Length: 352
Ligand code: NAD
Image (cartoon, rainbow, N blue to C red):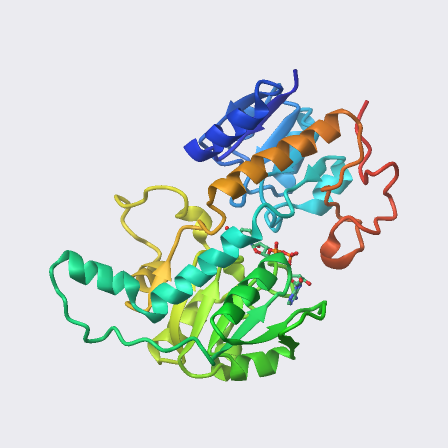
């Protein structure tokens, strides 16, 4: 039986993986994240299952390869935390879950929008305290307003559909635009200037790092609502803080944060807060921060476990790897479509 070292394991992961695994793999769950320091835990394991805040840099990739790990199974869609060049150089296969529920993430973005606009977070706190005043809770009709969607992939498209349901006009910016009914693809500049709500759904890459910086915030419609359920690094947090302070950004819904790995997914309520930017953002009345939870629905957890284990089944049975990602792939977004090294459905050959 093949053994999987499963990092950053939470009770909801164990529940879904144990149910779907049904005994076919020996899964060793570890609460800790995968970092250079936790590498000894992979000894004797054939596969590693990692998540969004595991740090899979060259040192970790080398450590996995040295320990005889053959495959890294990411149980997420984003893969900005993996050194693919190192994985490619050292022959470590990487697979991921490209889609588990675009609805989960898009609906969370919509939840942030509705809560921020109608001040639901403040209203709940007030009524709990028997304060039934409405002063300061005025929102705006979404109907007739413009939503700007950055990244019209699986999640962006679902979010655009939800916004259309509210009667909003949709502008979109995508590096690889794919025409869609009811959506006007425009240059980024125009999206910034015309949108009342901007929602980020593109991956974090070198090109998109700090896509929303001081320069971008200077161009947005004053009072815009910014939603980020994609990756924290898309937004320069200091610049966002400044834009919130001077009212250029009217509200922000953040499910991700650039330095989230130090804070998110754990109870840090007893820790003295050294991160001033996060503390200030969290304390603002027009900001809602959630702890990278947009994916967290029953359906998404089930799909994550099913696809991750199917990826491993395919790997160990020498079947083609539909969800492999590799450094050499030249397709859109570097996903396995045109990899020159791909033979028999694999980019990296499995070691005998
Ligand atoms: P996707 O690959 O289907 O869509 C991404 C879109 O971004 C594509 O249309 C692509 O062309 C576009 N894009 C690529 N580079 C771009 C650029 N430089 N500028 C503008 N657009 C660009 O991915 P998806 O499934 O829709 O996921 C989107 C992102 O959501 C992921 O990268 C991931 O980081 C994030 N995500 C977050 C959570 C969460 O729980 N918060 C869960 C899943 C995914």
